[in-house]
Length: 87
Image (cartoon, rainbow, N blue to C red; front, side, top):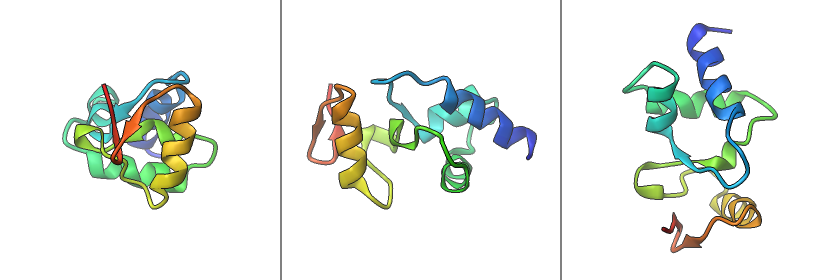
């Protein structure tokens, strides 16, 4: 694995139930600001990560299965309105 992948995995693995971050926030926290799209690539290829806690800019659900993502977030107490994290 690359240093980038390891850093992204560490950031996402540290998220607690109910935490929601954007792809851009993960990239910046991992030390790679501007690499938001690459974070999505890591999520697609790494099993066991809480992928549903990572959303697009503005809180938009941006996964191939936004209905499942909304359900998983709602199960953790996150309010979803019109395909976005509210509040």
